[in-house]
Amino acid sequence: MSRKKTVKGKSSTSSPTTASTNSKSDGKAGKGIVGSEVQSNGVVHPSRPSLSNSSEFYDMAFKVMLVGDSGVGKTCLLVRFKDGAFLAGSFISTVGIDFRNKVLNIDGMKVKLQIWDTAGQERFRSVTHAYYRDAHALLLLYDVTNKTSFDNIQAWLTEIHEYAQQDVVLMLLGNKADASQERVVKREEGERLAKDFGVPFMETSAKSGLNVELAFTAVAKELKHRSMKEPSDPKFKLQDYVNKEMKSSGCCRS
Image 1 (tube, one colour):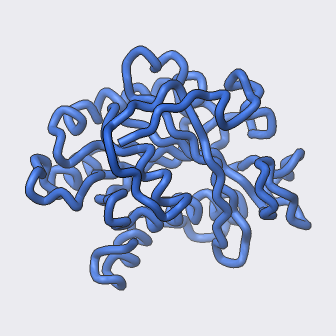
Image 2 (cartoon, rainbow, N blue to C red; image 1 turned 120 degrees about the vertical axis):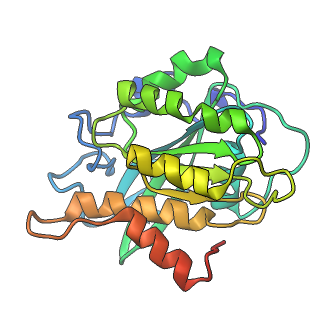
């Protein structure tokens, strides 16, 4: 579900270029938006105030995009993560693109995620394409109660590979996992598709909160690790982290 909104409602930016003036443009997804300047390792000390109206401080910032068919629950997922609430009621499509900020404490570092909620309809694709190149991470959603949204994942992946940065962090989410009676896409199908394309996967529910916090935290950990790691440091394995966290919490996290 989504609420109708426009770009102007959330930001004074009028174009993808002005919306991301502080992001890196060298094609490296691991370097984030950090205050008004970015050091070579993507970290600024001391912490700088957020670019939003929030008074929160952060050490590093990254742009995350939610993509997928219209109606898969991108806006609801974002609102659940940001506000801890569920948008119940009639479905109204997102118009264009919108964003919200949230600062997470990741291993003692303040990591700000600037999360962009995109419209899934074909007529808005030219708008969302322009934002791909500045994204550090993409959460690609399908609706487990809508087979078409699952079948369209391959087309979305093709689009992502065409327009996004080569090393963008990507995760596949099967949303609305709480709707067991209406489910038409099995969890195993999502796992198999994710394995075929080599991307991390989990199921989520904006309604119950299942794995919502975990999805964004996992992405933030990956981005923070990329920004700060030394050549000798071991690679952060996002799927292994997700599996471990789900196992330790009984397969579910809200």
